Length: 300
Image (cartoon, rainbow, N blue to C red; front, top):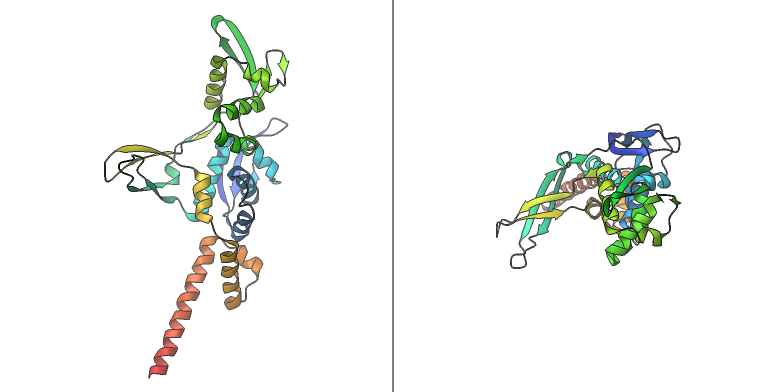
């Protein structure tokens, strides 16, 4: 099977402190589509961890790629891998449709772009835990904080909470990431909540500066009202939307190819969605051609 190769903008730092950045991954196949159908009740972050564990074959020298490892990847690295996975599965061109956000307009707007053109911010990571000192109120007062960067496990744990209450979820995210405050190791959520808003803001800004980032905000212009606007592009939601299928439809496609070509279910599900549909299109055209020939003979 063909492998796509790329380099993570951040990278995975193992327990020995070694940084792993080079990745090889394979396109999504029918097996992953079937898996996504079975995971329809789970959140997008959990689906990403599972799908990446199936399609990522190596990270640096690590070949035992588990769901647990995918959960430990930084948020920016997971977004980047989803972009690369989409690129090797469906191609680099993306075509999406959105509505103009202005209430009096609401015109449909086509947004087209190429995945290689999406800006990626690399991170120069050398350690898992980052030590920073922040000013507290006056110039002389300082507070030292040790923290790690948000990862996939944080996304899975807090995805619902961010939809319910953004402020509470942000506090819980900081609590999960902060390892130490001055002499306090493993601070409680109350101790993190008691940090001044200034310190919290400085920590969040420092996290953003250190972390890898994928620029997923697209610019567009409405062809009707000619206003410019920004579109937050959710790669996970979009990619899973492209792959959305029902269990019944997938079974019918497998049955159709197995019945005519006598291929096994395993062989068919190992194909990518595009390849499977190419065979279905060729087979449908051939059946139509044969049926047209039979009808012409009967008329003659």
